[in-house]
Length: 174
Image 1 (cartoon, helix red, strand yellow):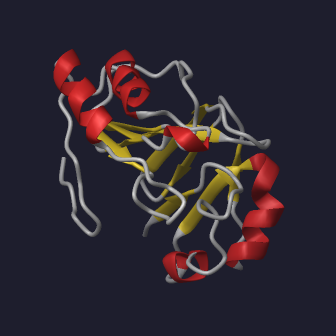
Image 2 (cartoon, one colour):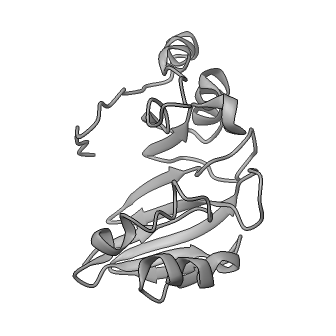
Image 3 (cartoon, helix red, strand yellow):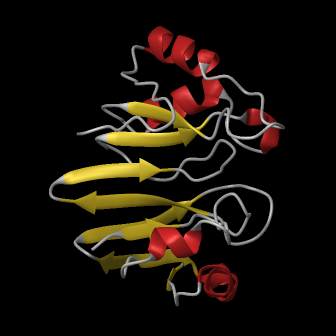
């Protein structure tokens, strides 16, 4: 069983073309409570709603919605816990203190031109949350998104923040 967590209602996070296939086979879809109707419409699956500060459990995962700041209502990040591991996925966000600390992995956007963290802010957030490993995301995905992860890598090095740059299709095992 799998869990898919959407952080907000923008099409690149709640994509009607890919969600049905990703959720096929009985995956649980968790999303902010303010976008459940949109999520159901786009995916064909009734999602599990969660509001900031709330926790849901699904398929062996514990997901807690944490603060995120991004245009539009109902944006959250997630603290995901399973098998003794803690993963922080900020979702799209501008700099914010999510109240999360001591995580094994932080997944952070680095395309600052789109109301998201830039590379330096993402590295600083990884340090703030005490990430043992930080991985940038949400870059080089679309024609209009020309952000590079280079600033993130340089700032992580400057801060002594462990990080890993993944390329499309590359996996990561904790």
